[in-house]
Structure formats: structure tokens, C-alpha cells
Image (cartoon, rainbow, N blue to C red):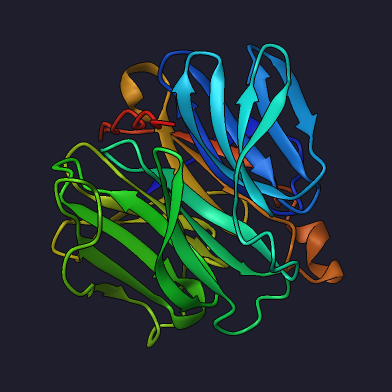
Length: 287
């Protein structure tokens, strides 16, 4: 088992959505509950405050991010901090917010929505593609683990509340084709899948909420390895760094009882591990 070291010591209430920008060579991530987008410039921590909860991002060009928020998809200019609403996302459902998301190989952006109190089956998974938003899946409670195989023909997603990760064939335009199949089922072992990412060999690295680690499953679904983090509530991994051989992992304070905090000094922090495996560069979003 590989052990991660501390990357950023800011404690997030709900860290999520790490994105390694392949042109800027810079990591971005979110604290959903504090409505912050975070990053670093060298050793200097930086953050941007938002008017609504924001949770996931994709890169458009060197200076532009697509950001998925509570009510909309936003175009965000990094140098100037300006933002522009592109299109609504469940803007008529104020009890919901966005959650995990990632760009697909065709330049679309998949993102899950969920109830702010994790109300059963209140959310879904959507795809933003060239200015249009379509719902792909409904009746989701905590959608997570959105990632894509290096061959570009398979999507993965989870419902944390059900303890299951599915794999879905996607067609040449990036849309789901056929019915999803179970990839990994944690429901009988008490593990909770959170965010996930695929490496260059097609392995799926899954943050396990409450287990303090990111587990690696091969393309056949079998467990292969794990990265241990100094935070129990790991939320999402992302490959980045030199040659994409570092795994960054966000975590959360949310869900920890007060009497556990003295024993969890790393809770909510962001972690990084040096990896033998190489990641994929994040796909560019097409607006």
C-alpha cells in the first residue's frame, strides 16, 4: 500500500472535484460547503469565493474552466476571476446541488446532482455538451465516481448510497449506449465509493469514504492496490504532477463527530502520493 503525504493543509468541510490542468500544470479543487474553488501557485495557496455551491470543473483552455455549480454551469476565467453563466443546471430545484463530475473524451462534461441533505433518489447525472444539457440518469442519491476509460468507450459512475459502481458503454458521440452493468459492488462489505479516476492502463482508482484510502480496481473490477491517506473521509482522486505520476486526493471534515477531530488532524486536507502508474491527461471541455 502506498502512503500519501500532505499537499495542502487547508481543512475543507467537503473537499471535492480535484482537477489537474494539463496546460497550466496546476491543481484546482473545491470546498463545496464553503463555496470555495481552491488552488496553489507554487507554495502560495489561493482561493475564489462563489455565490453558490460549486463542486467540479473541466478545463476549456489555458485560462478558462467550466465549473459545475448549484444552479448552473459557469465559464470561469482564472486570471481575472470573472465568471459567466452558460446554462442552468436544476435551477428550479433549490433543494439540490451539484456533486462529482468530469469531462469525457469527446469534450462533454458529466456531473451528478443530489439533495443538499442527501435525500433519497433526489438527484441524477447530466451531460453538458456544446451548449446543451441532457439528463442521463435519474433517481440518484449521491452520484459519484464519474470517470472514463483510456479507450474512450466506457464511463464509470456510482451511487455512494447504494455502495455500487457501474460501467457504461458510450458511443462515438459520447452518449450512453445500452444498459449499465455493475463494475464493483461494495454494499456487502460496508465500503462507500466516492470520486474516482482512470489511469492510463484502464485501472479505476476509487476514493472510499470513511476508509481513509483510494482503492485501485483493474478493468475486470478486481482489487489491485490502494493509496492510504491521513484522512478518513477521502472524497476524490486526480492524477497530475510530473508525467501524471502523482495522485492528488481531496477529503472532508463533514461526517466526523466532534470527538473524532482530535484523532483526525488530517481531516479535510488535500493529499498527494507518488505513483508507479501514470494517469491520463484530463480531457478538454468543448463549450
